[in-house]
Length: 164
Image (cartoon, rainbow, N blue to C red; front, side):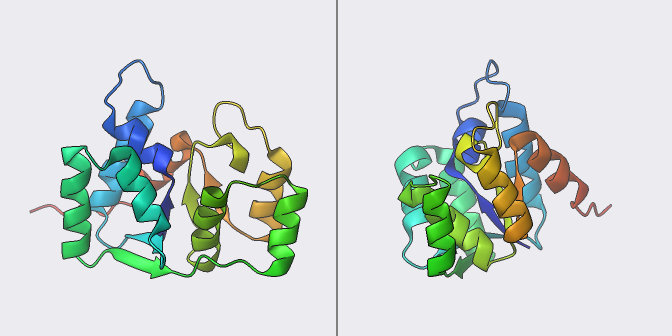
């Protein structure tokens, strides 16, 4: 599966703040993702997602090591981030404006329609602000938009454990 991980998942996992209630969920998401070799990290052709990752967690040795591993294992998948004019118009109506969020959404939509985020703009997280947007993404666009808690549970359930 081509998985889109919002930057906030990486940030929360790598900051190792035990007082942050999303730390464990996000750390679980990253750990499960790295162990599930059938999953790949979906990014855009213009490298906006990778640049955002590098801007926010690029100085974290753990992130650098995981990124190198993903490239070595051919688990980085490039996906078109472009959205149709109809979808872009609807996003304007929903006040879903941030260009970076649209890139993540576009990659997920054109990929396997799977995005894990803690961003309330998507209608998930601590304060699911844009519930109307969430309904649009999950019904009209048939996407799975998961909160950190949902993402931790889902990625854990898809892990394949091999006894050596």
